[in-house]
Image (cartoon, rainbow, N blue to C red; front, side):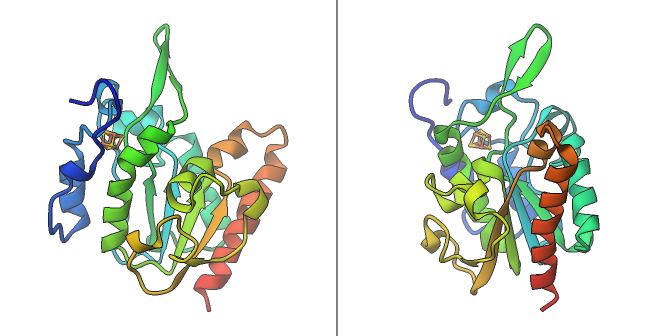
Length: 221
Ligand code: SF4
């Protein structure tokens, strides 16, 4: 049990020699690598085909995702799917997952209010992300927002400064040795929930789509 002190991390729950994403998903359902499983409804694992050419990595499941057990099915997910369409990325070529796979929240009355995962949660959950990447062979990794950037690109990476630019992957990862894939590319952009929170939502949405058009362009080459 991971109720006090430093989380034990997800590594102990990852089946050795897992060969499919379904095997990982089944094992992740029982993960107790940090305390977030205690309050959440269920693990929300990644979703999409193993042959996907684009892998999107977000922050964590939200309230609706937690209840349905699927990533990006709430308002931010709907907005992301619209942006993927508007950028002309084939949704059949997308695998989507999160840096942290349980919903972190605080209770206010009966409402569950989103809380950003802390560094300990990001580190504890990272082995799932590494295990997913070991089975995926994307052409591009899209890093959505600061939490995913911390998990994949390191704490010093600033999405606002470096968004929309193709970077070499895994060379740009914080620990490239974790991602033994052929040379591909990565691109960071804002999380779709940041668009929903923006004062100028139209401008924020346009910026997200522009970044994703860079991805679409790279896929077509
Ligand atoms: S957030 Fe990640 S490490 Fe923590 S219990 Fe859930 S799946 Fe395991």
